[in-house]
Length: 203
Image 1: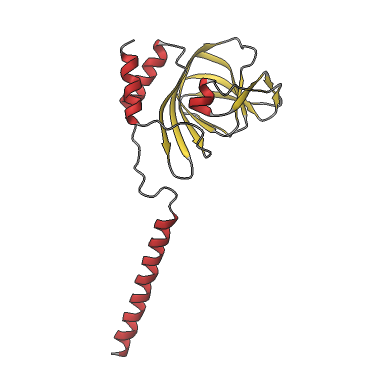
Image 2 (image 1 turned 180 degrees about the vertical axis):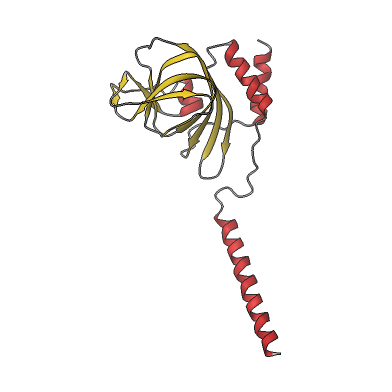
């Protein structure tokens, strides 16, 4: 009888501990009851087609999602052939980090934090308002790392690090995931993406 009582106490303590751990885990979640986000391949293909048809649509946001302590933004980037650089072709974003996943094509990208003659982008700039938040442009990167990017490669660019394509062989298309802990990029949901695609189908 005593053994049964002792077993009951032990089981009760274990259950109470487990419930406590689950409750603690639930309350510690940074985005409680947040829904997942699904972007089908067909939607990515449509954004890619828009970019191929109109080379001015280089960087197209597909989603900007609040995940609690941060936002995560997903974009489709398509760049055409590049063999000659402009004057201020180095980009840098103060608060937003970027991850490239190369879908097709190839190109050379240089990265590094030591920028030559950096100048801030105006707050009215489209990329500042809608895509990357505050940042700037520069003429060059001292002691840059050089990356030969091709389909399947991943490049992670922390906030504050300059980046620059110096050559694109024919084109390069990549999925861009932006990490936005300061929530400077406006939200974009599936309905906004549908409206964007509907507008561009009519062009």
